[in-house]
Image (cartoon, rainbow, N blue to C red; front, side, top):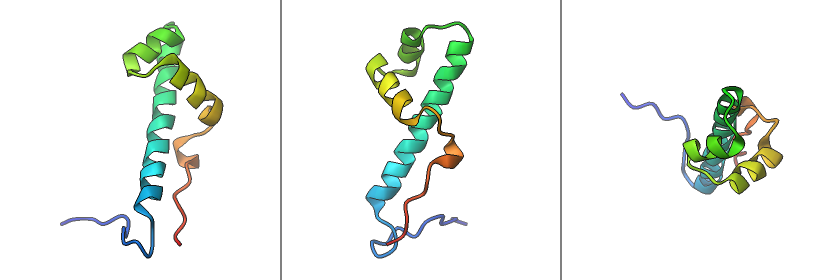
Length: 79
C-alpha cells in the first residue's frame, strides 16, 4: 500500500516549494552532522571534506540556518 503524504497537484502545492523544503531539511541535517564532527575534534575544513561540501558553503549555511532545527523548517503553504 502506498502512503501519499502530499498532494502534489499544481492547484494545492507547488512542487518547487516542496523541493526547497526538502533541500532545507538536508542543509539543516548537514549542519547537525558537522556539529558531530566538530565535537570529535575535527576542524571545520576536515568536517566539510568528510561531508563533501566546501568550507564556504558550510559557513554560508551556518550563518543562514545555524540555529534552526529540522522541526523548524516550515512546510510550504498551500496556495
